[in-house]
Image (cartoon, rainbow, N blue to C red):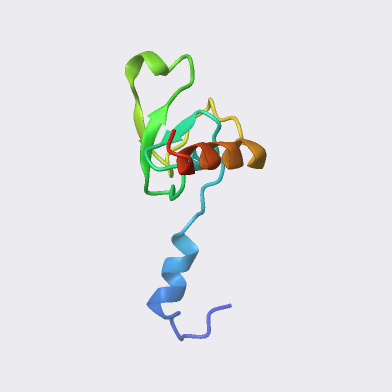
Length: 86
């Protein structure tokens, strides 16, 4: 029920924000430029076999219907390899 008092702008803005899950950052096919510091804004290659021929560069916040969730064990392995320099 309306009270006559409009919501403050930050509250209205928050209602328009939707968080996307199952994005590239949490996908097994995403290879970020910097595995140690990857975030939703980082760019990297998509290595899915259907998309690899296109050398597709995506950001961590992108998504598609080929998403496959990466396991924490795989993340740890990628980060160990990156910190070892190879």
